[in-house]
Each structure stands twice: as C-alpha cells, then as structure tokens.
Image (cartoon, rainbow, N blue to C red; front, side, top):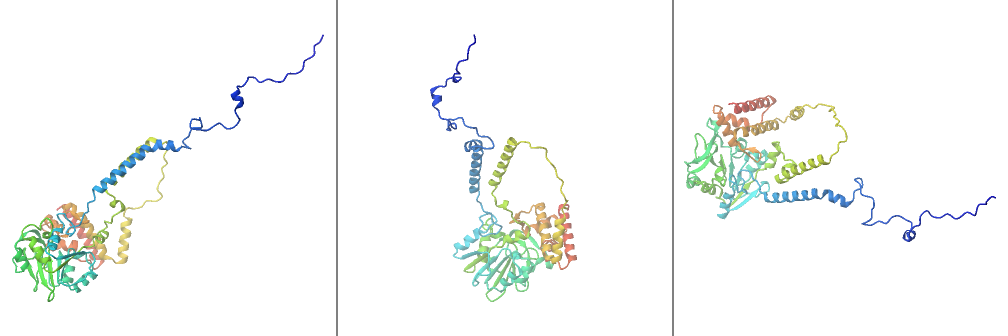
Length: 427
C-alpha cells in the first residue's frame, strides 16, 4: 500500500523576532553624540581633535608673544650719536642746550639748513666734513652772525674760513689730547671762562684770526671775523660741550660765551643716515627687531625643530644634488671694481677704501664706533700713539684726505692703507 504525499506547508521563520525589532523601521542608523559613528582619522580630523593636539603649542606661542611684547616695551631706549643736543648720555650736549634756554635764548635743532632763516643768530655745525660742496657754498653765502664749526677738515676750512689751516701744514702736531688748558688770549669769552677742556684738531690762526688755548704750534680754538658783524669760531673738539665735561673748569662759561652771544642758536643735525649708507653699514630688516623678539624667535625655532623631530617620519633616503656651477668669492668684488673704473668714480672708491680701513683699525686700536663710524680725532690720535715714528700729517691725509686724481694715485692709496693696517697690527 502506497502513501500519497500531503499538501505542502507554508515556510516558517527560523527564529521569532521580538515585537520591538519587528516594529523598528528600516533606514540608516541614528546619529548623535552617544552614537557609535565612524572615528575621525588623520586624513579627516575634527576640530576637537585639532584643538587637543595643538592647544599646548598655541599656549606657548601666546606666552612667548606676551613676554616679547613686555620686553620690547621695557627696552625702549633711544641711542643718539655723539654731541647730539637731544642726548642725555655722557657724550650728548643736552645740558648745554638747557643752559642756553635757561638764559632766555631760543634754541632751534634742525636737519635742513636750506630753508632756515638767517640773521642775528649763532649756527653750530658739529660735523662740517659731512656737508657737500654745494651745502658749503650755500652756508658760506648765508648771513649768520656767528658760525661755530666743530673739528672741520681742510675742505670745510677752505670754503668757510679761508684764513685758517690745520697746524700740520706748518710742520706742527695735528692733534692734541683733550685736557684742561689755560686760555692765553684776549678773546672775551675765553678770558671770562679761564681754563677749559680743549684739544683735538689743532689749527693756525692766520694773519687775521686769533687763537686761544695754545697747544704746541697750534690752537684748538680759533676765531676769525669774516665781515662787519660776522664771525667764525673753529673748535678742534666739542668735548667741553658734552654732558660729562660741561660742569668742569670753565667749560660751561666758555660754552655760554661762544654759543649764547646772540639771541638765538641753530644747531644743525648731521645726516648720519647718509653716512651709514655710504659706509656700507646699511641696516637690514632684522636690525630693527628688538633683542627680546630675536631671542624669542630663536627659542620658538628650537621648539619647532624638537616638535618636527618628534612628529617626523622618514620618507626615504636624503638625495644629494651637485650644484651646476661654482661661483668664485671674489667675483662680486671684481665686478664692483670694474663698475667704479668704468664710471671713473675714484673719489667714491677712495672713500670706500678709507671707510673700510677705519672700520678695521678702530677695533684693533680700541676706538669705539659712534653712529657706525669711529671719531676721526680719536682714531688718528690712537694711530699716532701706536706708530710714534709716523709723520704727523700722514695719518690725517691718508684716512681723511682729498680724493685721488688718477688711477695710479688710487692704487698708491690702497697700498698705503694696507701698509698702515699691517703696521698698526704688527708695529
């Protein structure tokens, strides 16, 4: 007996689902702060992960910036060059300006003399050798009642005081140390002041001038009348006007007598910026950054390097590449020399040689640099002390003389400057 198969039954689920699972709708999983979403990777970081990773670096940079700002604010001291009437330093002359103003005189400090009015006044030129020939001619044509020149050279003397010459042209010593000296002349200002600290460059009074405070065969103070009411005062050094020496001996009386005899005083400020630019000491952007900022930058750079070593990954060996050309170190010097020769700029080339020689001689002789250049009086005196057998006028003519007239003279000047440096370093 055979059996026949029964009817097929409907399929049943393998496992019964819970009512909550059956009621849940189909769709993407819910997103929220407590949801288990995809974790951020290094290729797609979130803002929170970036903050946690860099907050300590940002805090360190903020503290460093704050400290640098405080240090820069505390170190806002301004440096002035020597004999500057605005300077309160020992080498400044603000004390003399204060004395003149206390006596009721009007003191005007200016950099430009072209538009300044002339008349019954005293004009003080602290660096006459920095004036151009055109400025010297303009100054000679102006009608200043009294003109006071501090340490003028041959060019300034020839343009402004034709009868006065440096004493070394007559065989005397060109310099003298600044020390207390008796007047020994009939000039009323010098007689009233008595002894004063004079020295520096020495001059001859000539046939129409009068010299005071004699030192050997020359005078550190010479007066000469150039007109009915015009007078020129030549001073070999302005040290007696400084804040350090004005209170000693009769320096204050002599300063008031020479500068305060007219109702107003005009004090010219030399263009030291042009002098620095010509001497090759042009300031870069980093020279204007305070020291605190600079040291802070160094610390920040070290911190960045440590962080780079900490987080860096080696991507492969370092590949070295040879330079395509080799540049000679003397190529720039030779190119500039060709430009000077093509332009026939012997005077500018000679000035560059002299400035470079003075810049190298000053540290070797212990002469400080004021406004980027050594004081001519101090430098020449130091050279003569190191080389006593050197002729008196040779050093002045070699370091601050007139420009050469031809190429042969320029070559001789370069050789003489080189020989002078060797003698100073190995006397």
